Amino acid sequence: MKINRSILILLYCLNTIFIFSQNYVDLLKLNLNTTNLNTFDSSSSKTQVNELMLDFTIPIKLNEKTSLISGLIYENIQTKLFEDGNVKTFGSTTLKVGANKLINDRWSATAVLLPKIASDYKSISGKDIQFGAIGIMKYKKSDNKNFKFGLYYNSELFGPFFVPMIGMYYLSPNKKFETNIMLPLQADVNYKLIPFINFGLNFNGQIRSYHLTDVTPSFKSTYIARSTNELYAYLKFNATKNISITIKVGQSIGRTYNVFDEGDKVTFGLPATFIGGKRQQLNTNFSNGMIFQGTLLYRFNLEKKP
Image 1 (cartoon, helix red, strand yellow):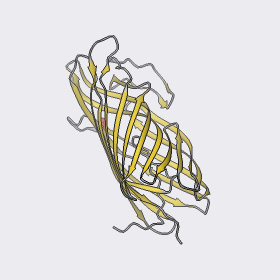
Image 2 (tube, one colour):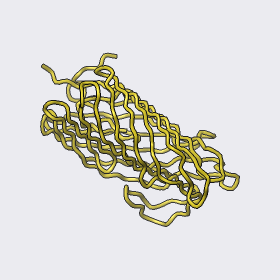
Image 3 (cartoon, one colour):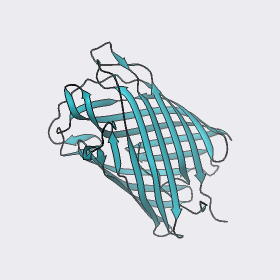
Image 4 (tube, helix red, strand yellow):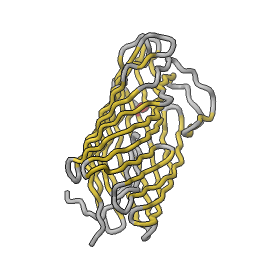
């Protein structure tokens, strides 16, 4: 399929969220993460966290003002959840269906539906299915600067989860310095050292939940509420105009993989708080630690028409 250079797509994924802000579209992204050994609280038991994430996006231009957004996100996570337990595997598969609309020369809007299965995949039922959506408004200040705000929602297993968002994108006139921010979910600042190497700093924050079956003999139907805040420094190697490989070294902050009974919920959640009854955590946390990440990216750069 031929991709027209005037397509404008908002994409950010959590982990799983799209941000229509920058002058490019990430069509294919593969992340591989691992950690050092992390110690459980009040125990000598340790565990690693290994993650794989594949994000595939297909933008389809309908006309000069409207483009469709489609694609798929797959993630696989492996770690111990209980200090005396075995390594568990869980993850999610998310479908991306939405559209971007250019309202005028300054404003554009993006809406994306994000239905997903979040599970250990031992058996699939309604407990494994979640429904999410994101809406973004973008104000284009200039070709290299814009501001955006929006709202993300997902029917997490702990209850409805809402994330109000505000951010900006800036690319310097010489195209060496770039800033892409969407608080409270992500922030990225990078500088092109030489034509094929960028140095950058990156922050990612996310809260997600996954249904588990028979996580232990005592707990038959539970869910994980996974919360991570990660700070990275990285080098990006631009192999070609469209393909890059990024090597990141980072640190987790306030990382939790809390297991709860399936009926233990809150009224609703926000990025910094949960409203409603206090839940009873069934496992213990393990420590924060270093994270190592490698990323393979295929990016389509959006150019202005001559």
